[in-house]
Amino acid sequence: MHSTNPQAVCVLGSTGSIGVSTLDVLARHPQKYSVFALTARDRIEELAQQCQRFSPRFAVVLDEDKAAQLRRALKSGSGSVATEVLCGVDALCRVAAHEDVAVVMAAIVGAAGLKPTLAAVRKGKKVLLANKESLVMAGPLFMAALAESGAQLLPVDSEHNAIFQCLPYPCESLDAAGVERILLTGSGGPFRTRDPGALDTVTPEEACRHPNWSMGRKISVDSATMMNKGLEFIEACYLFHAKPADIQVVVHPQSIVHSMVQYRDGSLLAQMGNPDMRTPIAHALAFPERIDSGVAALDLIAQGRLDFEAPDDSRFPCLRLAREAMEAGGSAPTVLNAANEIAVDAFLAGELPFTGIARLIEKVMKTTEVVELTDLDAVELADRNARKRALEVLEELNGVRAGEPHPQMRSM
Ligand code: NAD
Ligand code: MG
Image 1 (tube, helix red, strand yellow):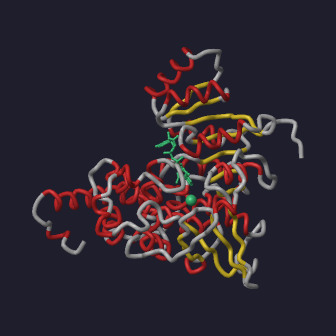
Image 2 (cartoon, helix red, strand yellow):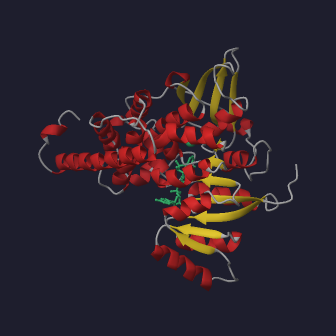
Image 3 (cartoon, protein in one colour):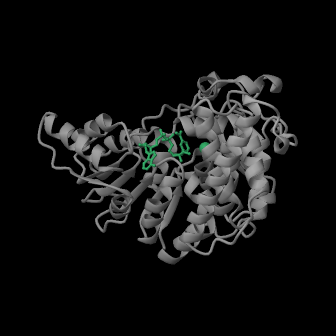
């Protein structure tokens, strides 16, 4: 299939791990895709270089200072760059929903991705979803917007992309498709075999050293606690209209099988490949075509073996917390996500021990009321309140560590 006009792509979060991999794939197919907009919160020098290389119509940053810095960098760079520099969340939403955009890569990290991603969904764009947090925090709203606008949501998260590849398309109902269950695989992260007693003292650097994948710091910590698998569990429930009981988490240390679908007739379909995000990015970008991604073919003989085991719930309480949040429904996943973002930031800042992440989230969940998510305002309110509560719990936890045991903390 040949299209004369390249498709215009907006890359939200272009300086991140997924953003950079996306630009790598796009650069391989200049006849098929053009870069319409690039956005970033920081790493302005890199953003300027990306603008020089891809000449997007717009570049969006978060505040005026960064915008001025980017304009200076673009002026001092070699060659003339006609990129218009914008700033703020509204500008992010405008470029993501712009009438000239065909494809939006949602690769901002965390809750900050929700508004621009939802703006693209509401405008009926082809949305490539890496930013799982936006779906976790606003799942029902997100899926309703999708049904209403007819936007196409293609999962980039490697597991969900694998599941998508193993299902018929379109797939409105797992039951009608003959699916018995989804097997969501996860590597178990850097601490899969670490003595649980030693987890209290692991450093952010150790937690961010993932055995198979190179990723941003937030998702690396999520992988170490397995909250990443918990968020992905919720993500899979929404994306594939699955009930919590339809999904089983399987630990697979080599990250070669990216996930599987078990059918009623005994067939188990898996999608495999080297752990490189350019494969799911290229798949989602070109679907239903297949394009070159730059990823080497998987050599199964060199790989030799593939192992599978059950996750250890006592080592990874975050997995249980995510399952409980999905079962509770309403705002519970929003609260889980918000508390996790605060906890991970605190851990990365040296203000919370690794094992404190799950303790903090559990405490926030136990002391926060679950409400219905009627609209975006309700999502934002639930998110804000959960963050406030998480900061209070963080203070309580730190009070314990600094001095005498706090009476409220004894049960934790
Ligand atoms: P990253 O930290 O490397 O990059 C994040 C990007 O978002 C950067 O461009 C950053 O400037 C921008 N950003 C950060 N905060 C922002 C804010 N408040 N407003 C606007 N922009 C902001 O993260 P990543 O590893 O590329 O992950 C991006 C998303 O993709 C996450 O949701 C993650 O869970 C998901 N994901 C990542 C991988 C991976 O391999 N890295 C795999 C699957 C899913
Ligand atoms: Mg994943």
